[in-house]
Image 1: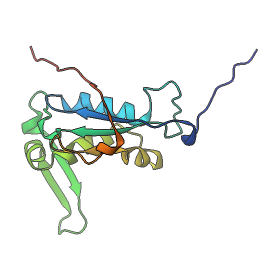
Image 2 (image 1 turned 180 degrees about the horizontal axis):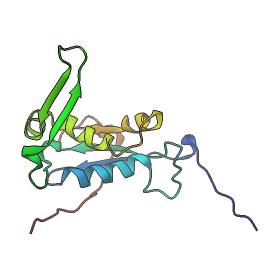
Image 3 (image 1 turned 90 degrees about the horizontal axis):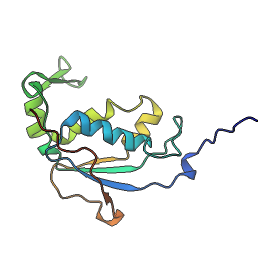
Length: 152
């Protein structure tokens, strides 16, 4: 007897809205959990070639922290062809204080598949620096993705 594999389409899966408080969470652990929800790996109907993930709202991303000495050593590169020289380099400290939403989005994007499917998934991520957000009408479900990790 042969088993049938059930493949779900994008239209077959019900999408939910989740809200995550990023305060006092390590950036990498938080981003990997968010990427799992965006891809739909937390659902039993996960299909790798289909966008069956949920929407995620991240608040308080300016309070996220980096482990080790990454706050001083990590660099974020961006190639802007509109400027002379093109390469823009920012440190992690500057990114956290001035561009915290971009830092979280970049980290999550690094953990998603590249290509058309990954670009569809990243559009379901909404990142805000403070606790205020514009998606109250969606009635998001508050979820605790990572527990506070204590350094010893």
